[in-house]
Image (cartoon, rainbow over all chains, first blue to last red; front, side, top):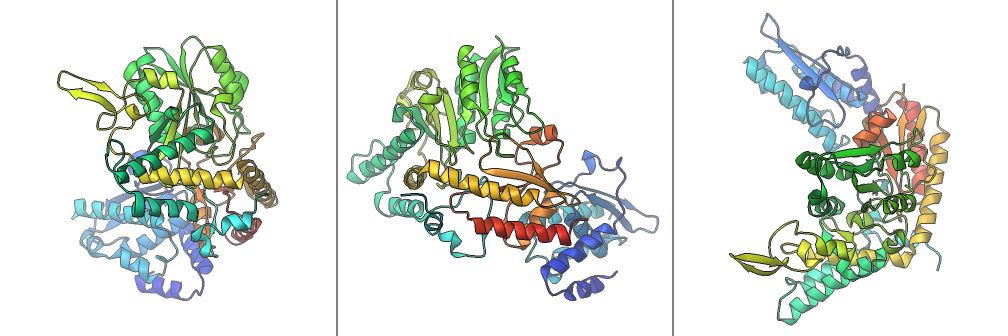
Length: 134
Length: 403
């Protein structure tokens, strides 16, 4: 899914309940992280629920992210993050404006500041990987 | 006059937003107009630094500050206003007792007895001084239902126990602890006690002399007062024997480089310019709540909690966490297939404010085997309509979002 497709899908829904249900469905499609990856070193600080994130640089120079959370809405946010950042070269990850995407999806009105802080922490973690890889 | 909930609610300007269902008073309560007026009046008419001002304005500010202290003393049933130390809140009050009273009494192997249901603010201050002295913090066990196991508590009291600090009402699951029994056990063994009343002070009438506790701590902001102000009650002879906690102005008698002598309590423990307006606001909050009738308010809140429990129990896939014999203030629950933060976020979508997470009571969450909970709590302004709206929203969440 492209960013534009994601925005289009969200625009299709009139009310927040549907947007949240869709967000959670997106999260449900994420593969779960293995338990041996869900260790303290991989926890993203600043999230209200537990979030784990790891990244690797593939042979073709693209950054592959894996992340999981025990909260379904947060898994949905991870899915959004992946639409924006998954398998991109580190320079593209660093150039992406994920906050703006969040606004375009209309989620900023409903998701509380705490959650957004968690989202920001995830973006920051992804950017930190990209900076090290770039 | 019996307690009139609608009339009380109308005194809180924040509820001019009729869409707001506020079920998070256990974290911080809303403020009635009387408190806002007292704060504004203080800054508009009485504002000056207190104590030692020769001018009339300073004398008025001092009188207002000390009158607030007297209100707190009367509210808690203290023998004298001098037994009330203003602090930033319950947390600072507990830290003060830990550092000034308990720490000098500790040696290696000594024990501080708490319970598994303490807020972190009644765990970490003891861990800090235990670390420094070689003492140990001992938690008394909680049953699966969320009650303190009083026999096990008594069994953990020994000659090594130097202090007992127990929460009155659990902020996480609402358990009302039998503090009279706990204090009796402590007294029998000659062990001083602190009651963490942060959660109980708005819901349960307190009388420190009848209880016989040595210290009691609470925060103003949960009592419909301002943030940044709270109080420590300490028995006069104990406060008198305690060294200062922080150094600065207002807590001294005479300062010289050859030696400084300290003021008598409570001034000894109030270094620097205190939160004068906050104390005045807290006094107004106590006046306002007292005028509503605390026992009547507590009975009213119990009907709200009963209604909420009934609604939660009627929903398949919803589980109340903690079934204490006696409950005040809060109910914690879990929803199958949803994380507490999902439930809290979704409730927010329906305009309902609740708290989610570990509620600063991680050891209790571990004991009960839950990652955290969603917690609703009630205050003087909540109505059965709030509970009804909460119940409808949660029903919808279970139907729509839970797997």
